[in-house]
Length: 220
Length: 395
Image (cartoon, rainbow over all chains, first blue to last red; front, side, top):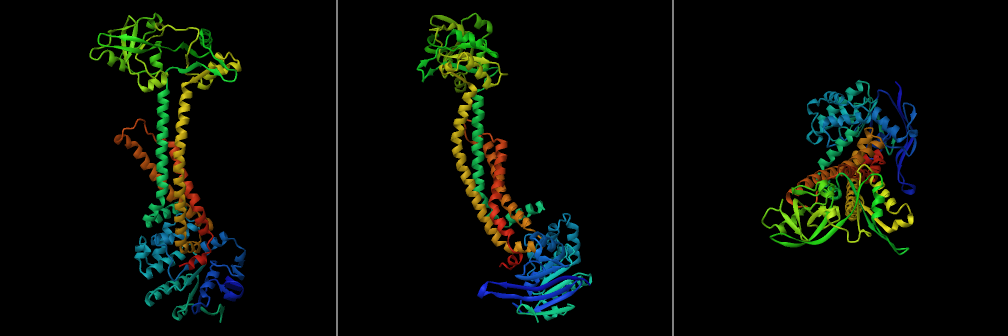
């Protein structure tokens, strides 16, 4: 296995001087390609911030993030965007679908940012993969929570990313639907995709190969 | 990608219809005002062109002038006529002959305005012939006692009978009436003779003082460029001497068109300014709506950036949205303005035509898109510079 992501002495703080609060406290961490990692921790432990830093959505206040050995802190905004478009897929607790686009249009959105203009066939395939081919024209408000999260998963897979980052993917779902979503993430992992799931639900984390616990911005 | 921006722009307008309509109202009113003002401007231009257009020759009038510096009065005489006739391109030169004389028929008598004309006059000045015909060259050359009556004079002199082929007594001489013409306001403007009752061959009106002519009417071939024709005539009457130039007042109908056009343009420029202010206010309204939209859609910006959108993608998205908002207002204004202008004459009695000029109106539409871009620059760049993580945290 090759190293996909490495964090070296990563700090993230809010505020300055006396009012400074450390959210991430000197994280050293490595993620291998093909892993299924679970990150657990209480609310405010810094797990979502860590996920944002890994996903290049947030810059660390100090320390370095390496993606496939390349220092991401030296990259421009556009390079980071390109990397997010092509290599990283995000799944959020609140789905974060655009309400004025249909399920298929939501799935096709990352394809257009990656420069794929004939995105309709890929969008249809992905919706079929998550079992929603019949709902491709439906708007998010007309979908159930489970269906919305499936659309979000299909969207995350659009550009065949190396890494899927899921932030509390079952947090807004009932346990049965949450189980189905985790089965889907398990299938992706078996297909070779690296998956990182942030959760405070132990039953969700148990699906992962490796579990890291966070407290006060560092691993326990 | 651009189609995606456009699609989202229309989807956003559809999702917030009331806000969109209110925000583009300012632009709509501004552009509508512009379209109507431009239609009036074009109508005036066409009307002026039609008013002063001659047929088969361009007309230049030469009057004696006054040199205010040297305190010298200009003088036009037969030698000026001879000199002008030698200018290349000049078709004819004739003193404008007008005279007030008594004219009577069996039914009535009037003190008539007589105008002496040649056989080309009616055609060149486009004087409408109601009945009968104009003068023949032979009639003019032999100074025959024939005449054309204007409509007004006909009504006064022949309240009941048919004037054609009848005779009219002018200063004791019977003139045969060969035609009736419509001496309307436009003809009065073109010929610089506001009122006329009877037209007679020029030779029938003798000069009161042939040594001092008040107006020379120069007809120049239409092939010569108007400024050149004017220059040639000026050179001829001033004999190429710059000191003599102020002694003559030379003007062409083209100049009169230009002066009238400039006058109407100056008046309309004020109205255009008011419309431009309305557009500016409309643009500020759109900018305000876009700032609100960006704030409301902060989370969406975060989602788009998480999915791989670059700064330019976000920037373009909001710029296209504000342009589409303004452009829609502009397009609706152009369409309804053009429709209104074309339908207006059916409901109101306008004295002039209203014509929507295509090119300036296309520029108007382009201007609204430009206003949209300018109005969107600040909100769009604010959205583009948002940090993805912060934007995603926005509630």
